[in-house]
Image (cartoon, rainbow, N blue to C red; front, top):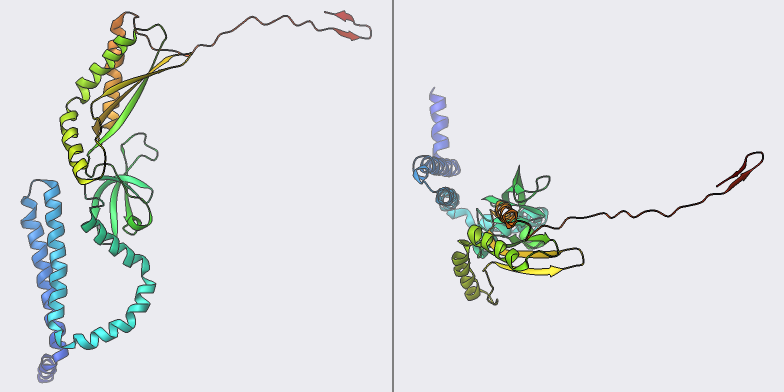
Length: 309
């Protein structure tokens, strides 16, 4: 028992052991504090976006505080440690190029405004909504693939942050949270073109008209921020014609998350109104015209068989 006490006293009097224990205790206390704050304080925040950012801030603060605490404990040895790290740094940098670039990408994402959580982006060939931004990877809820339209397919994809330096970053919702979309209607020749325009305009005004004021304000901010010309966000209808049909194209702005459902509502409303026109407006259909074939006479001569016409 006395030997055990003596050994413990020797360890306690060893400066290196004391520093290790102090640093470990500081890290443990900080980890517990971060966990308590995240469980009992940030959970009270009702808005999911604000709660997510608060949790991220607390986590980053914990990492920074832990590094600072360890630096203070080993402050007297930082000179020798710096030399050792300098020697090993070149080899580590070469071996961990992708990791370093991903960390640099995270810094760029955080400070450069490439995207934020909740944005719909395409990164590294993957399209989806950003649900988390880590130091090394961005996590996306994937869209498309075997699912048509802008719908989730159920896969969660983690893309390295280094891709922000390697490929274009497509952001569907950054400064202008709307998309322009179009539908094309094929109308038969002889239909009332004026009434067709009115039907399409009425449907768009009814379904996407509320987006116009908000979209105009958002675009004004775009003009102030970027060197870009003013754009028309009002719904508009254009027409082209071929020998087979007239094609009416409706163009409008829509919330980036409601593109598919909005298109369905506009189509449904337009077709409903066309059916009320009693044939004054009709959709074109593909037709196949059959003509009578010419008579083909075949003459066959054979031994003992005579002649056939």
